Length: 402
Image (tube, rainbow, N blue to C red; front, side, top):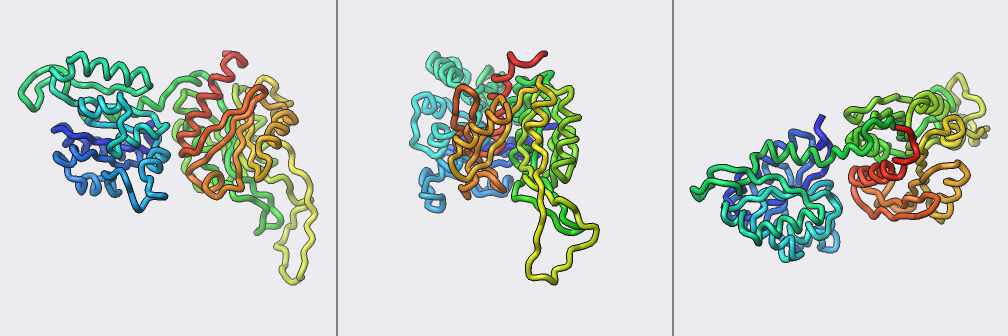
């Protein structure tokens, strides 16, 4: 399985003859399941036509710093928030120097400064330019800021020289990029995640449910698998493919989800409850379809079991992470839930906002534990999931047995 599956990749292309390889990189990224958007510098356009990259990716190529079609004309901010990975290939000596000094006089430079995404560069330049102390100092500076270096390769260059400096071959660039999402921080751990809504039947046709899409839980399952965990995903009814390297257990009701969770967590290390479990169910389920003749219908409901509290009480060895979807007093209600249910941490998001949460591809959440509250600002759910998994891995490291 490719770790690039469902990842959002900005492919940045700078000026240089190696730009012709970028077309192959874009194709290979998409073969690995990534969604690709291309940003080109003015210098890149001298070597490669934007139309080529548009045809390959199926999306318009971004070249200008100001985009009148973007929200508030700030296309670089929207792109920066969208990405899970910023891959600059080729990265010229000039653009690398601009990155070091924080220059934002091009769209690609502005995206680099604005994004929280993983950033990698594939340098391409003459061997003497690569070996120059200034270039080497620039590379060390970028690496110290978390930028990953891919290459360069050693061989014959377009200028006729032979030596290090030419861009890595496209398949190597993509392979190295995919490894950036395999952190290994949960290697040897067993993680159980609940996701999606539950359906509580009223009769053979009707049920009580909610708007949960399951996207956050599925993103967390993917991120946990990429971190090396053995993942069991207990899912309510959603329209999402099963994440690779995850065991999926399909359930409908809260009772079914509880039974599956109790069994799966018996030998697990971490339990992450993202599912939007219905609070109530019908006191009795009608065996025949309820007729719609009467003007009013009275339903008798009873409380569903509390999955988080029950699992926490049954399996005290688990590192427990809950989710709280609130429409007001977000942190107050979330902290109360943390204490009442004896959780190690809770992730709270504001469902009153239409731009995040249910049925959106982006989210913004607060991580709340016994000692702190941390805001994870708005970003793609896949990127947010990776950051939350890293937080969970670090937080529980000393609390569970190896």
